[in-house]
Figure 1 (tube, rainbow, N blue to C red):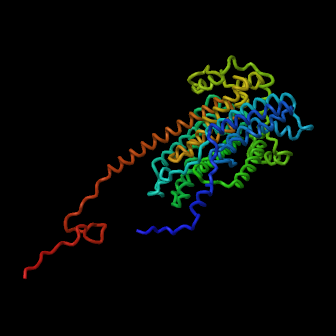
Figure 2: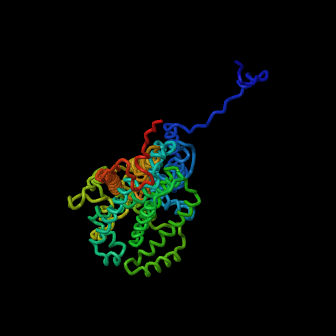
Figure 3: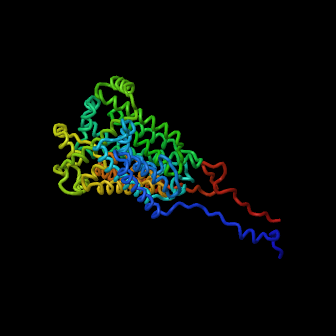
Length: 524
């Protein structure tokens, strides 16, 4: 049999053998990438020894900020919702934004000695963050659509959908119970500080917000994934997600800007992990809106409790009086606490690692253990402002500051690395796994959305959030099983359709249910 190939010209085989094959450029392995980032981390101390005045720490911190994105498993890429970009940026806001802004606006381009000492601790935490993000970086996975989208019944509400609605309503009921314990009239007339103090000892009720946020992320992913597959979506999904999102706006009335921002961020992370790309332009517009939203809420909380009109007027006035919107008061306060702890070294821990151990002990509800240990922020408030601490005040304690006060620079690197890897990077990887369900994707992205909020906080708060989300997931799973059993029980209770007698016509059919009767053949 003749070969279907055409004969080659003379010398073609030799020319083909001599032509070098093009090799695809593959990203470096994880071990090599981690070693490269570890080598890059030595640049900061070297430059600081040469340049001084915080300039070397600044350059090194900026290099560590972009290093995980450059050493990304899928190749270099900068996208605000990629975990290799998002997590280092969240940490940078908590410790690096304010000192670098001061350095750029300073006369002579230098920082005072107390800022330099604080930046050294921040640099140690940045090293831990960069190493953890680089080591855990993985290639993006294509989602298994059948695990997320009910292809055969796209317009049907699933048992898990109803279970998630019930969990969201349960969380909302807990929040309503907290407001009722305060009094509706008092709730809308008290100031911002009193609102925070009313949460003392009522963490079980206020944790209902986490259940509501999980429902929001779940429903938006269900809606977006079904639309991406080109299938019709049950209207109940969109209505439920929109309703729960509107309830988050109650936090704006309470003078809190974070809950709405973290909820929107959780939606973005959930969609991005599923493969629904969001344009960088829209993300940039969103960041600008968040900046001015924060300024407006900060102005409104000044006169909180005096009526909505007074709050709106105060917000507008605060926006008009803001000369430099890049100077964010919240970031400045968090960094000031870090400077105070590094330079003054307050005696608020009795042994190394005490606050890490207390973080687990504080998980015991206060009604069950009245003498449970105080959080690090409360201890710092007792040392810094005793009068305010008597009324239950606590100051924001950054992760780098807590790690430093426990174990020095090494403690800062360890704590930030554990938080970055275990609580932020791994949940996003699970949310982006091919076979992850909608509930798992929404839960992982929601936990990671608190990255900045917890880099500026302490380890205790992060554990409380993780436990609350774990309970919410368990509740959805149990309710899904209960709803399924109830549905099957109701189906079994329905009477089986009776078979009509032979020769009779079925009531719902146009012809006889038994078909035409066969006639016996005639004899000739």
